[in-house]
Length: 219
Image (cartoon, rainbow, N blue to C red; front, side):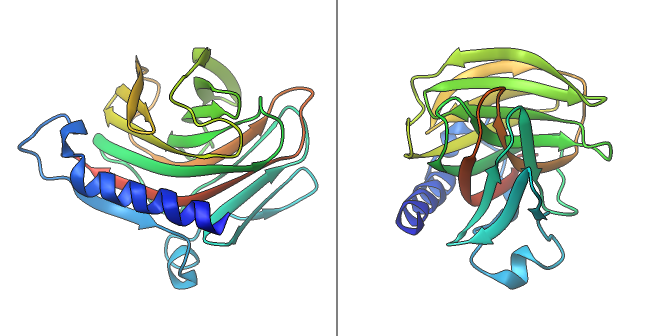
């Protein structure tokens, strides 16, 4: 896990410094407003402490240079997020994700525009090469884009880089630097960021590591 985490962190940092063509406006100077590589306890347990869980249904902890999430129960999700970190109107969110073990159909990815009611937008991929864009509003899940094949996903236990480029309610989603989806939803504006792992009905014991999270404001 540690070797794979170091590799994906290096690739993501290289992309953030060199892949400026992905940003919507060439004259905009992007500003990294939050970055966490989970290698310094003073960072991830300080002002922007990440939510951690130790329960029967799921567990969230930090080890081996990554935020780790296990979800034991079926039809259950677990998210984690840094306190006090929120997006602006135009931003890019990069997350590295490495599946460690569990069912191929289980989902993992990013959340954004999280509000005080724990409602948010989420973009996830699966170990068998699918993607989905959903929202949680009033505690109810709605598919904006249902489960769809995504050839850009590294399947199995290979690591993936997920990026979201947002302009208020318009979103471009990248997997491993490939644009895989363009979508829109105006349910939320601004809000918190985080990561998520989820088991569908009939599946159990997904374990995923998130070695890096970077939020860049583009405006």
